[in-house]
Length: 125
Image (cartoon, rainbow, N blue to C red):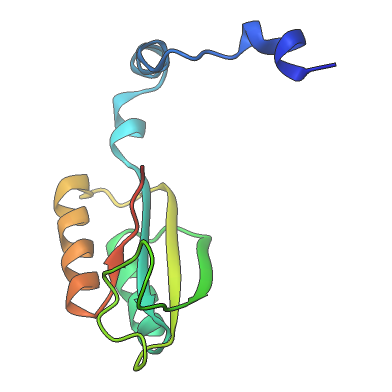
């Protein structure tokens, strides 16, 4: 039998309802300290990138997914695929426990670091 036929009534399709549930039942501190970001960096800059992200958010485990850089396709942010043939998607998912964590400022610093190191922000949509 189809899962949705049996249990579909339990799955909320309305994102407004999900937001309402989140606002009512999850503390604001938890919502504001959750990081959900993916960045791509050339393999040769991976170690420095991990050290930077450790200093910024200290969230583990990290998602590391290597990929071959292509000069065509959806990711046009790779500057020189011939020079940097392997890129790594670094996924940061979790709660930041740092007491002085500011999500907007932290995201700006991470985005700048990635741009300055021939990387790119992976779309979250």
